[in-house]
Length: 331
Image (cartoon, rainbow, N blue to C red; front, side):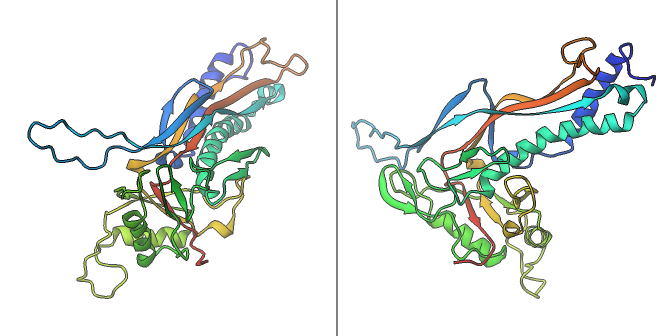
């Protein structure tokens, strides 16, 4: 390829789009799998929890059907925000054929957008024992659920009953059979609707950090033919294929994305089929390339500016689809 100049600009931009997409795709949005993702071009959206009908009633001959009004739950308002990054391709980089450096910049630009979205989606869980956290831009983010409590709490309330429920595993066990069964027990005994009746939610997914010990233990449980906790190879592993496993690389991180060893044993049991985590996207992650002699080319130094951005909002109204263990054995 000849030097990148005005004549070869179009070819370079085509290549830039490929390089940006490659960088964007290189960061898988794993946390996105836990969310109900929609595309809507509005600044704010209101979300409300609404329970369905409970049990049908007997109907005597000639009687009208009984009517039931579903119980209104709590509400939350989602507000979108924008994330963006810019890369500068200098005149000298183009003049002296520094393609490796230019390619690296554009790939990093693609990664920056997807990494930030993954970080934000994950941190709703990372800081889920609090009602707010300060993100890497210094902005205070409210992450309470509809009942104004933290996502993971021992005394969640419902709108039509004084009964409370918990979605934190007692004593925060590390991932093990006993720990998993304690999490399953919360789904079986704690989840209630807004009228205080039992809410049947079947978990389908185990979520964890990328801590190798935790990940490998989960893989043993979910993939072993025989029970991984006993020496008798004839004992059936009841967990084989029961759950899928999602590993979140940014789950055990600080607000800036640095490793946080205090969170490395976090794991969760979730019903993704019943998720109430919502991500609304108004601007899909994309690259904007300059054009020669446009206002995207710096008049003072001939730099070319490439930028990538996305706009989205995140909200979790109802916590009844997920439970957490910190894995630190604290009471």
